[in-house]
Length: 260
Image (cartoon, rainbow, N blue to C red):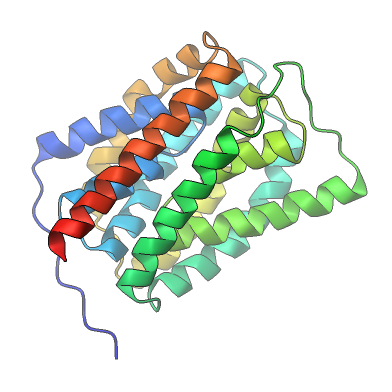
């Protein structure tokens, strides 16, 4: 029988606001919800894995709404692809939140690290062109639905909005430009975050106070990140993103080693 998880520590409003500011800026800049940063930081602050993951998904929701609006204003969203992805994400998010309540903590920890490592490698394998677009064919439509299910499952299970895996997928497999991939990714996160948060809240894996502080603060700076994304080249965007993920992964491993 799985041991019960105790209540999360009482983090200060200042710590949560600072985390939200950084997550919001990176969300707009890279087209991600910010879960890749929120989850590791909450873990470093001794928040249990399941609470960190569930809270991250809830905090991602307002951030994704504001970020998607920013990319939508500049025309950097493929709306049809976003809707297809969202359909798959809603189903996948419920599966992920179901698994989150049942998979042992060590498995969640190492799965998250493996997930981050795969994303870091993928960012160096393909550099997009700003003029690339997604060509919708029957095969592409089926692929987008399948990608949505995969991303939704990871969202509910690992506490990430899915952007750190979806942006490389849209670029590598579907031929999207980096800006369209980022904008479409944020659009897709909205229904996925709602679905995953409902499932996680039902299972007691969300701290709403943390989510409100982090998500509300992130909304304030997300538009600044969207603006910055248009100023840097796709190559340097990928390079910066991969280094950021590597830093977060190293910090998590060091913390895990100190605890064992």
